[in-house]
Image (cartoon, rainbow, N blue to C red):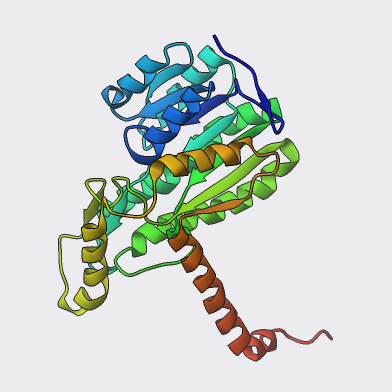
Length: 289
């Protein structure tokens, strides 16, 4: 039996659609969302990976087979959710993968696949859900990006490109949808104990000696650190729910001390370049006649 609890203007029987629920943030988020009494469509490419979650909440959870790179999967998933629950109030785009390698070493097929999942899959999910939220005149789109959508490191050039794309897309989307009652938030985590740096991330097969000290060294460090990151997925899921329940959620939410540190460093770097080259910047304008 569903219950209703008003919390900061948020009704607890609203409907969530969460992608990429087989592991990591998506799995933990689905568990916590359902434990709090929400309805949720729990989506994954392999339905067997989420059967335990759905079985634990048979009245409020539905399993959804979803590969975000397939347009028919996306349309079928959204149709399934609306037919059963009647609406979609929170869309969480969590599905994503990583890829390691310098820009020169990276494989074209692998990086395009990553763009299809990390960016185009996310964008297509949003485009499918937006007509529903526009009709409702309410909704919240939460995109799981990365601190790598704000600042960059070696060995991740194409991964960063996907996450910078998510960040820019989300910022523009937020300005388009705010008059319609639809909120947008980008989540930017640093290192968390998920499978992102493990089996979920492929790496370049070719190696170029000149990049071993930069891309190679950082890739080795990330791989070695996998499973021991300071970020706790349980706490991250709770933070995402807090944002979804907020009356005035942020456009961007950093998660993890390293995310905050690196974001502030990026701001300092930007300010340094802007201030140092201010005269050149302003001098590019032509005086008004």
